Length: 112
Image (cartoon, rainbow, N blue to C red; front, top):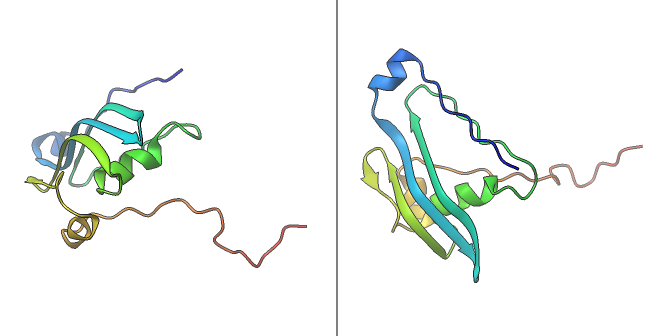
């Protein structure tokens, strides 16, 4: 079961153009179609959260935005520029980044 909340924006944010715009994003792992028509806009000054349980596609969404998935379809724009066909390092050079979750930050520590 998934619920999509309608976004609410501060008045100033509604006037600003989107810094990041994602429209109709689809992605695959091999033959498995795993993202279906994701739309997302983030404007200057906004804080946006993408939430969901494990396996819901949060990390996969951002991997697709960053060009880290071999097979994807849809529009991705950053600061008004189409970045859908760029390599990940080219996207990073434009100033867009992705820091993946890693549960092994302190690999030498144990919990007792």
